[in-house]
Amino acid sequence: MDINHKFSRKKLKRKKENGNYGDLEVVFFKIGRKTKNQNQNQNQNQNQNQNQNQNLNQNQNQNQNQNQNQNQYQNQNQNQNQNQNQNQNQNQNKNQNQNQNQNQNQNQNQYKNQNQYKNQNKNQYKNQNQNQNQNKNKNQNQNLNQNQNQNKNQNQNLNKNQNQNQYQNQNQINIFNKFQEKLKGSRFRWINEKFYKTTGDEAQKMFQKDENLFHIYHEGFKSQVKKWKENPLDKIIQSLQKYPKNWIIGDFGCGDAKIAQSLKHKVYSFDLIPTNKYVTACNISHVPLKDNSINVAVFSLSLMGINFFDYLFEAYRVLSSNGILKIAEVKSRIKDIKKFIKAIEKIGFKFSSLDETNKMFVLIDFQIPQNKKPLISKKDQDQLKNSIKLKPCEYKKR
Ligand SMILES: C[S@@+](CC[C@H](N)C(=O)[O-])C[C@H]1O[C@@H](n2cnc3c(N)ncnc32)[C@H](O)[C@@H]1O
Image (cartoon, rainbow, N blue to C red; front, side):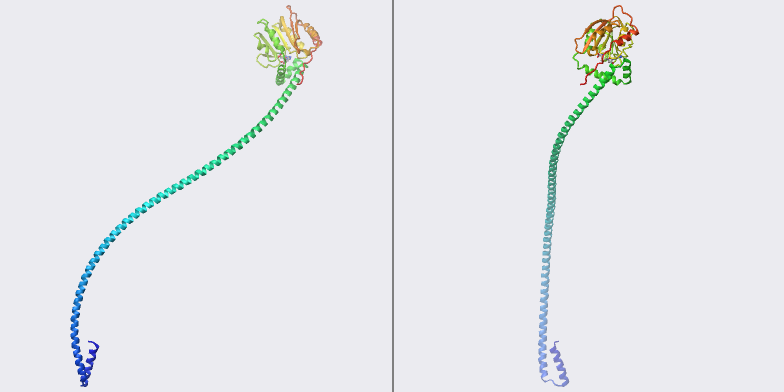
């Protein structure tokens, strides 16, 4: 019921109460008509509504169907979409896989590239290192060359210094040698002088005390002999070779015993100090030989002591009859050669020959007669000793 209808009912109620219908009746009538119409309309409307509702329902159903269809379609579409999506997904997956593969490949390539890069870097590094090493080697070689040059220079300097030092050393050695030679020479001259100014016994004592003096003397003597044009000993050896091979020779004051080493004869070699196996050490004033036991007695430059007559007396003792005495002496030592020969003859020797061909030396030979006499008395010996003196042999300073 609408408002107007409620209103008219209220109006009617009041009219009833008030007993007055008039216009209200008309209104009421009208309203009633209207209401009827309205009801009819309402019914119509209701029908219409119903129809409409039916239609609506139909529509709704249709719609529903449509919707269902639509839904189905939608579902289909959805399915299609889903499928599509799935396909898409699959494709996407494929793509993803492809991408992944690509990525992997890319990664691999990247890795490869990285490795290549690394290798390149390594190679570059190696090359750099090689270059650096080459440079280092170059530098080292340069340094080596420099060092070699320096060493060469140093060696050259060293050689120069060495040469200078060698030269200086050689000079020093030469000076030292000269000094030594001079010293030896002066020592030789000193010993030689002693020899000529003393007896054989004293000389023997001197050398026994210091054998080195004997060797100094002999070195000096040998160096003097080298300066001689002719050695009287060689002449004596030459003459001895003619004698019978069974003859026995005595070398008094033999030095190095050159006679014994040069001849096949039996040779007794005597000297104060033995310098080799041929030498018998003794003072030639007392030799270890029996009387009349040898055929030749040689005094080559050995009548040195002031008691040289004692050496000749001893020779006479050991020489047999027809025995030969050979004397080689420095000319300058003998003041009067004839007087000297006569004095020797007083011992019991007979003069044989004199060789004065050499400027420096004389060679005198004597022989004991067949009937050899006994040695002169002690008294006659002393007289002889005092009758003749030999000068010392002095070697000049050089
Ligand atoms: C100048 S040298 C000659 C050496 C050798 N007869 C010669 O002609 O080559 C003299 C030698 O006589 C020796 N002499 C001098 N007096 C001597 C003595 N009383 N006893 C032994 N030998 C002596 C010396 O020792 C020295 O060897």
